[in-house]
Each structure stands twice: as structure tokens, then as C-alpha cells.
Length: 369
Image (cartoon, rainbow, N blue to C red; front, side, top):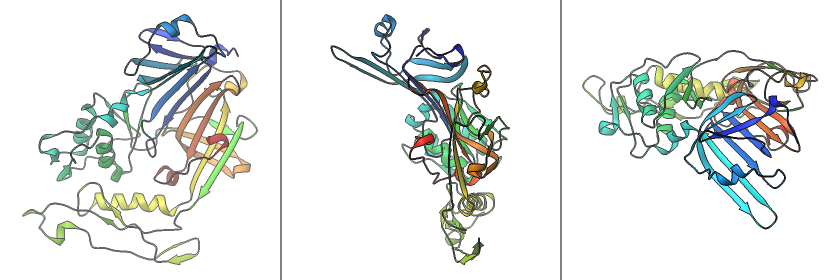
């Protein structure tokens, strides 16, 4: 079916623009559970006659491309998958791709001696990212100035795994952006529009859970011995510890051990890693999936222009009596969709701080499908 100009998706490959797709899906996400963070999938079939240009241009994996939605840049990257099926009566084409940050998953980290000794966190992070031809952008603050005595690199470890392991103790999560950069979210990145029951929410879905009812997270870490730090047990591990916690009237000796990813026997590394795990485990994890019309705020009222819905890491205010929600939540993922059955939709996955960590539940159906 024809879509208004404010709902046109364009795939640009090799300077040629392709539109009139039968189905469109563009997804932005934080890398808490999925990589790469920014991906797309376009399809066309016999339901829409395929222009000659589609058959003539052999779109292949590795080709540079960009995606625009409603006139806004959504992805800069390259094609990862091409699928074609045809018979006497049918012809089907599917193109998938991702941002340039995808190369972080396929390139191994290499450094002299396979370790960084006496280098600050910003230096290590930027060096890892540039090895795959990417640029690092930090949003919501800055990288910590902490300098670990040593940060070792296992042979064959990907750039993605190296930087995630480096920044996780500081509660920093990774994502991408429409320009294809590697993005580190160091803190809140600003507010955005609202989703409101009875106004612009077409479908609402919510999951609230608490996995632990309060756990202490003693953190163990290791460091090589030296004349300055000592040797043996004094630097090889932190003494095992646990304590009784109380949450919602339940008293027990709740404990979950955590191993810090960055060496450091005291101070910010074990304390920060343990505090992050404690915060995620002891609080209610709230995830809301809200489906709205169009790809831009205001599209439901015919105002289809303007920027796309906020990117992962930004805030969206949720007002929904049915979901017992009246607060701002953080965008974990945004999925822009369009096809001949549902029209143009955006699914916002919104979480509180506790739900952004490990164990974030995935929707089984409905808004989160």
C-alpha cells in the first residue's frame, strides 16, 4: 500500500536509492544482550513488482550503504546478508545490514605483549576501537581516568569483548549511532518525548520482576605481585565476604559472588563492580514495551516530520495507569517497522536502571515480538 512521504524508507547502496519495500525493519539497541546494536532488514517480493534496478544491481555483503527513515539518517554501515528466492511465479529479495561498528565483533584486539600496562582507561578504549576502523563517541559523561596496573588481552578476543570487559566495572554500556560510530553510554543522555496511554500508545506491555530480593555481591579480583603491591594471597584475591540483607521484609544471607573484569585489589574496581551488580539484583526490574504509530513523535497526529524517536540510552516518559507507570524510563531498544499489513510502527523497549543489566527479560509476543 502507498505510504505518505513522512513514512518512506530508503536504502542507499552505491549511490543508488531503493524504496517501495514490502517490509522494513530497523533496530537500535543497547548492547546488553545483543550485538551488533544497529541493524536493518528490507524485503520485497511479487506483492510489489520489483523494478529493473533491483534485479540489475547485485547488492552483496560488504557493500557500503545507508538507511533513511522519514528523511532522517537511521543507519550508516554495510550490507551483511543477501537472500534471493524465485520460481516461475514468485520472486523474493531480502537485504540485511548493520552499522560499521559490526567490525568490532570480527576483529581481534592486538597490542604489544597482549597487555596494556600503566595506560588510562580512555587510552585503552580508544586504541581498541580504532583497531577495527571505528571511532569512539562517549555520551552522558566521560570515561573514567582510572589507570589499571595491567589490562591483559586474551589471544583472539574481539574488539567488542575487550572494550565491554574494560568498561563494565564502571557501569558503562555500549551501543552505536546512525553515523556508525561505537558509542559508550557513561550516564544519562537527556530527555525525550512521552508515550501516554489513550493518546499515542497503540499497544502496551509490561514486565516487573525481582530476581533476588536483595543480594550482596562480594567481588573478587586478581593482580600480579610486585615489590609495591606485595605478593601471594594479598594481591591474588579479595577475602570472601557476605552479609545479611533485608528487602521487602525478607531477611536472609543472600550472596552472589562476582569476578571483576579489570585487575585492582581495592578501590574503584571491586567496589564499583560489586555496587553495579548489587543495584541491578536488589531492585525491581521494570521493562515496558510501547508500540506507537509512525517513526517520529507526533506522527499519530499527522505531524510526521522531525527527528526519529530517541536513541538507546535516552529517556522517554511513560504515563499509563494500566501499567502503573508515571515516570521516565531509559530506551533500551527502538524497532522501526513497516509492512502492508500493520502499516508504519515503532516499538520502544523502555527500562529502569535495574533492568538494563544482565537478565533483561525478552517479550514473548505482542508489542515485543
